[in-house]
Length: 204
Image (cartoon, rainbow, N blue to C red; front, top):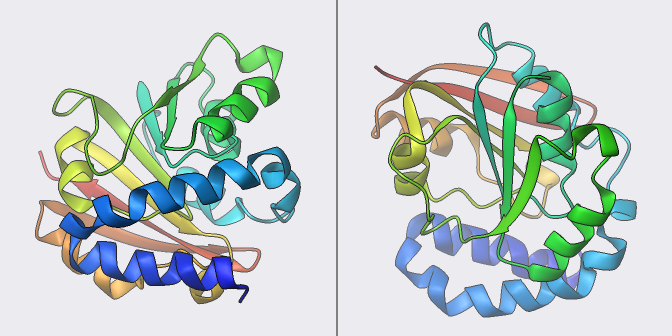
């Protein structure tokens, strides 16, 4: 891993264990991703979102509203919007330059249903149960907020484009334990390309 990737892994491990420490690292992570924003989309491998696609393909009922956390330049949001043609998708990120790129890259056919807003996954500006599906592609999960904004009966899909080699990565067993304590069940694992994904449903 590069120094930046190692830093991302360290921050992920710390934030998952001690979420309150995220405020220490948030400005550094924001600056790092702002700097990478102009080239971020080109850095994604062609199979980066295959695990997420596999997980979304397992949903029996299309969600009405999707929240894509840590959306970056919007690719995961576009995946969700393309799969569910009647769905509203909101992509959020702490890095303003990522959001600038996401808006520029939005396909015209998705522009009416996909929007991008600044927000921190550790403290989201949305009502309880506001989304039927929350997606995270290579993003640090803040489990209390995930549980809060996911509607009863809704789902969370968490994917990592290179499995355990992804700089921002949380093992499945940790994801299952943290989500399970917050009312999620019906866990299903998926793979695609070099990556993995976990789908979980929030109990009603």
